[in-house]
Image (tube, rainbow over the protein chains, first blue to last red):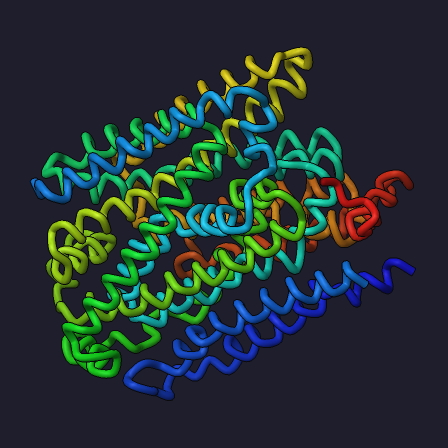
Amino acid sequence: MRSKSKLKDPGIILLVVFIFLAAIVLVWWPTDIYWMGISLAGWLMFFSYFVWFLLAVAYVYWIEKVEKG
Amino acid sequence: MQLTETIIIGIYLVLMVLMGIYFTRRAHSSENDYWTAGKSINTFVGAFALFAALASSSSLMGAVGSGVALGVPFLFAYGFGAVAILPFTLFLVAGQIRRSGVSTLPEFFKQRFGKSVQIIAVFIVVVGMTFYMVPQLTASGLIGSYVLGIDYTTAVIVLGLGFTIYAALGGMWAITYTDLVQGAIMLIGMLILSVLILTQHNGFASLIQDALAVTPTFGEITQPWMSYFGLFLAFLWFGIVSPSAVMRNFASRDARTARRSAMWACLLYLSVFVFGFIVASGGAALGIADSLTNMDMMFVSVIEHYMSPILAGIMFAGLIAAIMSSADAMLLAISAGVARDIYKEYINKEASEKTVTRLGFIIMIVASTIGILIAIEPPQLIAIMVGWVGGGLLSAFGFPLVLGIWWKRANTPGALAGMLGGAITFLVLVITKPFSLVSEPIIAAPVSLILVIVVSLLTQPPSVAVQERVESYHSDAKIIE
């Protein structure tokens, strides 16, 4: 029973989201498209900072909700 | 010698040592207090402490230097992994390790896999953290020699001994509270520097244009894909495999505070990388990259160019502060490894708290002396040395730890094989250099993963008691406060 619930752990779900997003950046890797003179592959990594923080926020509040329930 | 800067740094270091001495009495009152600050640090202090421990000299000097030398996407790759350190740690291991009730990484390995794995883990932690002292000491030596106008070797020795003494005297109490100050100085300093750069270049868009005009390759991906991916991996795993950062998590009051500290520390770390982008652009716009003998000095040059001597002094103090707090956290991990996990555990079980604390003190002095001796002739650039430490720890500890938490079938032979196999593969790759820089963990970590899984499946499963313990890592009923 527990091993099933492990897959529903907020950490594991958000980890899957994280890996998916990181994979998009690393697989797509658009080095030849430029925006403001900087490679889009670079910009994607830069904008991911904000997404990573949002994932941290999502985790903290999700876990707190789970604990309350 | 830069007089104003020297005076400010001098005052700063004296204040930090006084803080260390002030907390000494508290620290020595109990062993538990010494190692984890009595688990009574609040969210605010905890966030800054976690942030300051993560934001090492490399995140500042190394990232900015490499961003100018190798193009700003290289700096973005640092942040791509580094900003994700805390969320990644939260998702995968933080709550579970907390529930296990241990306070060091080797202690977890002992609880989950037994003594043999613990002893090897302690050995790897001590070697890894001692080597990690080298880039910190190199960076402090570079700043010190520039500001004080003394030769590099003397600067390494003086600064290295200075911050070792205060770390050794105060344990986690001193480190946690001085980290609050250091974290704040670093962050505010980076903010002011960014504002000054943006003002001088009439805003963000024209700053980027100025940088590109002087350094045309600034926006390009200049390195093989593997280097960016390797850097991302090495930094991403740092929170999980770095013994000092894990320990920070336990210095917070309770599980909720620990998580919130990590969340806010992630935002602080994010800000540093955003400011780092602006600072690197400011550096690229100066067009001095070719004249620098060491690219790690780029950050120092940017500070000197854009800031007044007083502000520059505060900034240098912030940089040395970043180095200090990281080095202190490493020293604490080294001394905890030897004094608590080896000496008290296996050599003298009856050792008093005072003896263990005193031994920890001596170990810190020994480790920092070894670090200073290597840093006098540093083997590589700061960024690469830090990449090695992150990659090495990931290759050795990453999968034995994560599978130890999430897969109850993982057993002692599997963990031993994964830890040793990963570490040896990593070392062979560093020595033989078959691939691009810092890409070693791309090969070594999967080798470790496969070894843990295959060897575990080929040997006896762990006892029922151990398997139940693994379940308890994921059960809220077992939270240990």
